[in-house]
Length: 156
Image 1 (tube, rainbow, N blue to C red):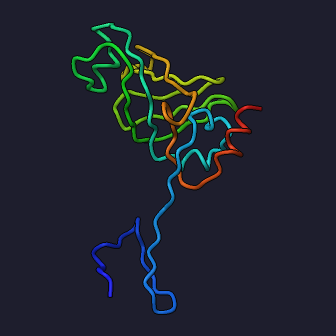
Image 2: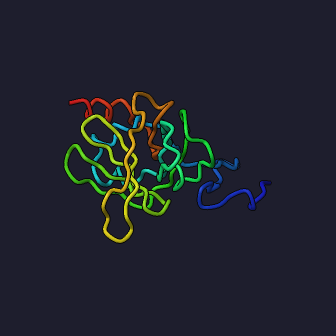
Image 3: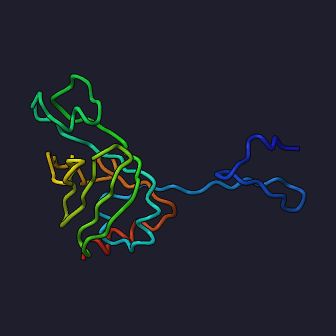
């Protein structure tokens, strides 16, 4: 027997040869720059983005206030943002609109930036660079496992 309460849309269970088998969707971490090598269908499968933001000491930082970092105004801060939608503007520019109001992550020409947008006009109010050198400092959380192929495509 198995507890049906432990199953659900993210953990379906089925019976194989008398054994109960559970499956779970595989989520892998990819370097932020791998987004450049992804087709739109694949970009839409990105669930969230984990980023590292370097705060430089500007006590009035709009970005720090927008992501509720409290009183911390200096140093490296890690944050994870859920993805509301994604836009592929060109072959080398992708914008992830986060679930946080007015925040977007832009990946463009080998760099990643966090942008705070004016809700009325869409203009960029503030922008800061994000670390994209490894999955430890900046990563896409996406279904599947094709990291090498996507990173190679992004480097071309």
